[in-house]
Length: 159
Image (tube, rainbow, N blue to C red; front, side, top):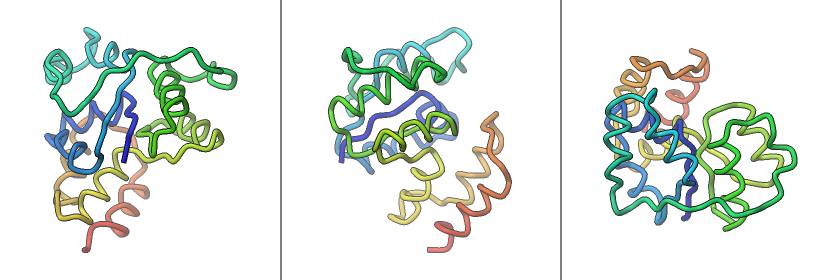
């Protein structure tokens, strides 16, 4: 399964110590150059910049092809690039956390999940203890409603 990742899921997986779930869940993980630029930005957490400056072999940085960007203008650069890349290669799934970007990607026919979906799938495969991972996520600046976190735990946490 080929996944294209936006900045947020990668960033938070790094911060909670679960970035190595991605190659266990997906046969290929691709990130647009714009996403890598965001991960390397001086405002990114040091752990994220360190990881992005020495990418593991399981992730491939890709140039974003020239593609129809109509409808993407209100999204951040990394989100735009991830959606365009996912469309152009016909990715199996795109990893996005921001609500607006998720809606646009789904409207364009892409299968979407975010960090909570990644953690949930990993939990169903016995790769992570979901409650502990969500507790670590809560210690970051990740924004999500308590109801969504509870729904994720209810759906995936008792397997």
